[in-house]
Length: 459
Image 1 (cartoon, rainbow, N blue to C red):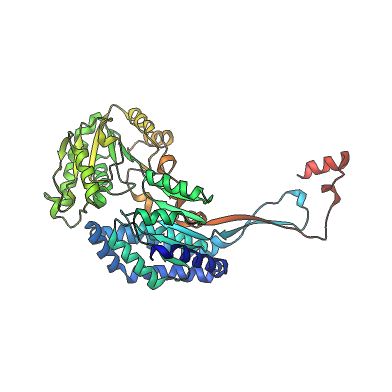
Image 2 (cartoon, rainbow, N blue to C red):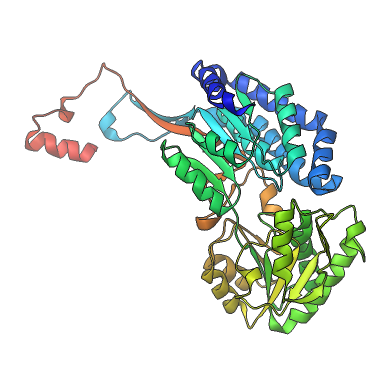
């Protein structure tokens, strides 16, 4: 969609919404079913696009980007009729006989969905599931960094979804800036906290509500009693999936000193099991999205003790899975979200020290704890805050269609997936229905002492 037509197309979408077309159950279910067909029919198109953008393997493309959106869409189709029903609400006695109170669900209107480059299909089309289920129109802005995926999204949306209700905008910072100047009824953004602030400021000019899915330094805490073999395998996947370019990926590890070396050795072994002696030749290991991020990541390795990896190739945007040990909590690699295949392993004296380190930073999008001891598990969960968490696992909490996903504090505002995604794009409107046949005088002035006492009891 050319930039000059953005405002006109938003007006077109708003006319569609104002017509009432998108409010019916039939329209919503038809669009959800069309989205599901699109994911099935165009699987090869999306897989090829992800391979072109980031050297993503077919398995990673299907299990992460496509399967998550499929599952969310299937869940919405299954539950939509139930979600749309008015919520009965207990009424106060003052309303009297014949009164009814309910909460109805209204679609917000025209939404803007700004996707991210690291999982461009999931993070653009995933929020769209909730928008469709709620009965909204939507402008989609895929990331310009994942160019092939952005084109695949635009082609597929045009081929499968209602052109009067959905539009795809391409472009980079200038185009996004102008897009944000328009008025929407909800803005859904996935990306960095820095850009999230810009999006929120732009939305505030129109008092538009926002959902911000951001990131942060998501830690894995490993207790001495953990099943280290399983922990190493799941941490290795949680870090190096998509070459570490995952918002809920393991950013760093804190492990109790007694088992630090053993865990490190096991992680190194698992990297080799996953990707071979030369990960550069592995079809399962992705590449860095662009030269800017490549240079930033290479700089973070400088001066650190490397237990594994460190090799890189700027021509291929390749950085080997890299394990860093003896890392200072104040090192540059610990000062920002890594978002790449570098895994710092920090040694802590005990779990309390690990919790204290978490408290020193912003609330992360995810937190992982490995321990067999339920008391330790509960201590970590109860004494920390994060968008989501896993005990003895990584990543999997994202793939729960009936559970909310989102950040807290610096890692985000709002949640989605399943019913929560539907509610994100919905206004819950309280409606009181009363009969005119009964109209007790007690609610009206003049009150007097008797009326006042009765009114107080009924309120």
